Length: 405
Image 1 (cartoon, rainbow, N blue to C red):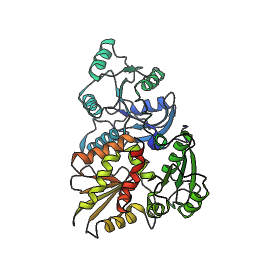
Image 2: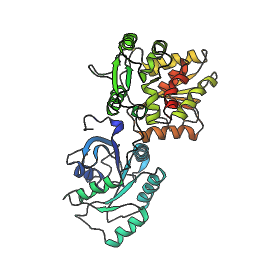
Image 3: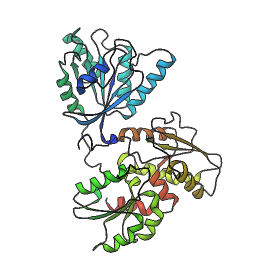
Image 4: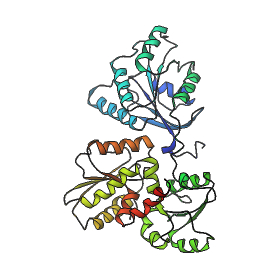
């Protein structure tokens, strides 16, 4: 995919880490060939993680993060360091930036421990080599401790930058070809009907992102995609010369689409497909079952991975709470909301988390959020799985995945 065609959640996420004034921002500018990050000799110039979508050969489309130094000081410094650690929850590849003067000090050792704990592929870069070049013995020691490739780079002269790009290409995790949105359920020339209500939150003239990505995956499988609104579903099915292999619907149209789709035609939703693609469908299905055990006074978090303009009948703040009340028989629940990066650190006080489909999050971050909930024993479900359960058709919507095994 080209840069413009690659969604944020599908790009390789690369984070530069290190102490203050080690040259992380300068290195990003050298890597990208652009003035992406502000550069200053003053310590702490980068006060919050800065991200930039780029095309970086030979890696392709990436999201690169410039982070505050992990040796920052004071209460504000601790907040900045916390935001840097949060970046690691979505990082696919980490670059630890050091310099000959410090090598691997306490700050760098802390970064190594964080990266190892999250099993993130790592490269170590000696920056500012135009000022001081590390000795061969120092490089060997760092490589032994970090268990990672070590490169010497000058952001000023550009020396070593191309070698760094090639080294990153070698440590990038291989794509798992088995991870597909829907293509693994299809054979060439299978017919797929996609029911896509016109979402008022989508930009004019566009489908929403999960719908776009699903259509692309169907086409890559050599299957045939027929896109229709829920109001034309019956006419679409009647116009087909053979039954579709699969009907995929927007979750908000579940009730109507389920009623109008013949029982022998497999049915699922975009959000359930993304529950499998970005998360863990088994865990999220268990979370849906937990809805029926909620009690008066339980706290429920409704979380979204992005921020968007709220509509009058917004799914997260209006529709999900309405379906939740209906499914629980009107129990008095305490509903809380989060969006974008504002995801709670402590989930232990919640009885359930209902998460969006994660189309704007990468797989690593969604898996982190699921693991975070599991660590404190809190059930988690995504929108589509929850809506299918709330409308009583979850078992039907899971059948296509059983059929594929």
